Length: 288
Image (cartoon, rainbow, N blue to C red; front, top):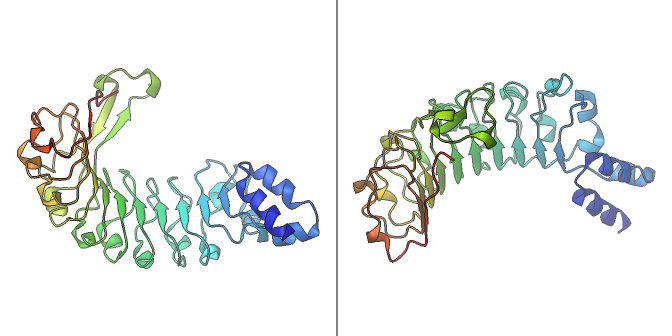
């Protein structure tokens, strides 16, 4: 009972240093309490990461740019517990370092060019973030996913088709990305001239069979021009940017849309046919 209370206190603490201090109350707490959510600190070595207290991690955030944490390149020892993995750095955790995972539900490997295949997670993975230009995830690497509900594949040109996910996919982000110019602080940005745009790479044929999507973002994707086949489910549509391919005809059959952001999209000029469902029209400047 006391251990359960202490474990709850550890779970609700925001600082790793505080969690470790609580675990040191006595021998019993040190040996029987665990860290279930971890953001790797810069001084964490592979040896420390393998300690018993970290052996039941459910959520791991690992993108620290430090000499020590770079050597943490495998999470296979967490195969029976790890559910959320964020390893958005360019090189640390690699393909063989995730091959034994059994329960992963959420994976963010956006900037990792060493993770290319997640098919072994086909029975558990629900969210996949692989939208960077440098991300290694490719089409064949998602071909066996069976439960994916959300994907962000933005400017990942290796992913060309999502139609095999038509029975599960509900949230899709295949938008472009804004890259702020060197030395430009985002808070100082004032208009499109302060950044470059990488256009979304997924094309119309790659989404043509999706019929259960509730949220769809194709802003700054010039390759997608029609979402009418999502008419029975789509509630939120982001189709902003002056290079977005969505036009008036491409939204003419939408029946359930509640929110739309079409800022700077000069090809959309009338939303009257959505009067019975539309709750919110986002009109902020797309480039601010």
